[in-house]
Length: 309
Image 1 (tube, rainbow, N blue to C red):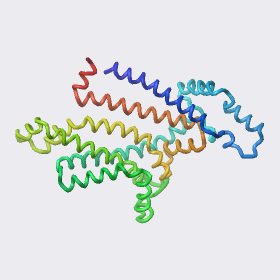
Image 2 (cartoon, helix red, strand yellow):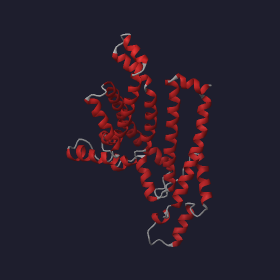
Image 3 (cartoon, one colour):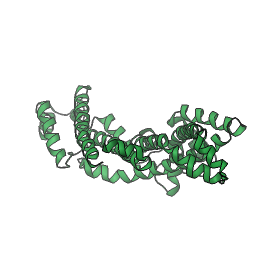
């Protein structure tokens, strides 16, 4: 297990290097000069060249990239072109907002998704099962920004129950968390239902029921535990998605998280800030996938033995 984790961590280094390189190349291909965006249109050419030299943008692209990698190893991702704020400081300041939003949406998706999926499997072919399957298709198909706008219109503007933008109160996370968690809740409910239907048809489930065990014990201890592998796979990857894929939700609700910071960096071509947010996304995805792989071994001993052979 230790060797496997070490191997995956080494792969992480190459993934992050590749992500940083691709991001740097793409940002240098896109038309536009960040210095001209910072200064007024009537700025003198001397001032433009001076700012470009101070920011190191007059150096060859290879030199700029190597300087970025050298500093990134020291956890120095540079400073924003526009605010001059250190990238690590900006990420740290906004990380808490993104985590609170992601964990709130994740709790909604996991609790409701698994519960609804299990109940749907136990009531296969009935009205509740049909309702859950139809709702899951609708939840997966509906765009996040559309769900967010609908929630703002109904529960924010018309009913006035929750704020529709900013961080005015603890209730500011309610609508964004629901909007962000609906799609993931629908996915988890579908996977849970399918996995439970497959497990409940096995011989050991019929044996457990024949022994007179309570239905609650059969479902929770025997069926659900053995149905967790695909659920954990989806849950682990979706946690990474929630921690990195809340850009539209944060933008619609004007939440000062990392997702909104990334969108602002793209619009302004703020290369240091954009590289920092992209690296954050890559790190979260790699670590979430690693956590999923490690969790397999604790749930299914067969996977643990296979890795040690």
